[in-house]
Image (cartoon, rainbow, N blue to C red; front, side, top):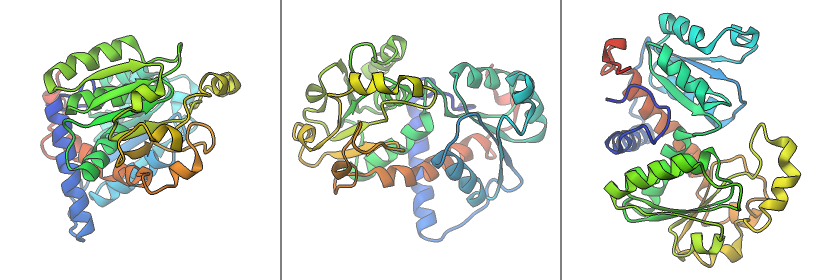
Length: 317
């Protein structure tokens, strides 16, 4: 049973499917004006060591729409900034709240919080994984293509947290994925191995290459992310040189299917990893992805913090 959301590699394919189905239903309910308060009286504490637009707004608004409340905390607001351990913080928050969302640097911080907490822990982003974004991405892809299994997604760029979660999420839903990254910037070997193992059970294929055209060839979706993530600013010039041939532009898209969609998790650096005409063009679904963060995360919140969750006795630690 789903007790935390730390990575999609640790989330069973059946649970990913369950989240996506529930998210689609919640989106339809909202569009129809149908409201309910299944998380009334519940509180989500959000710890942000990395700044955010979409993560903060989607979780805060999502909790509000579900009848609960969200509390934003930066390191300056709590004792983490003065040396208190994440384990002690998680134990204390377990006495006050019903869920913890963490957006941080080291993935080990999320894992340590989950081990210590008696309430669900959600990874809002770490340097290794970004599961909430990819749930929204998969939801968007299914909306646009009517299915997931049998599709191909090409990811062009840095083998970062987005690449990792896309590998895991695509493998878990039967979407074949091709990742094109320059030498030295490939995804983590263990993540790739795990995705390939999962893909054997879902019929997906996993390809790693240094050739963007090879990755994009025949793809139903072409995805990219910034070349320099938060915390890597000192490497920006070096990364621009390394990724110079990995820009998603009109020429590269000719290798994809004619009806391929263009995806980006935002924020984007127009003129670097993607050209403005492509990002803002008719094939771009980036705003749908951003919107679906709300619906996908509401589904996660409901599954983890709803009535089905009865506390630490239901956790498998």
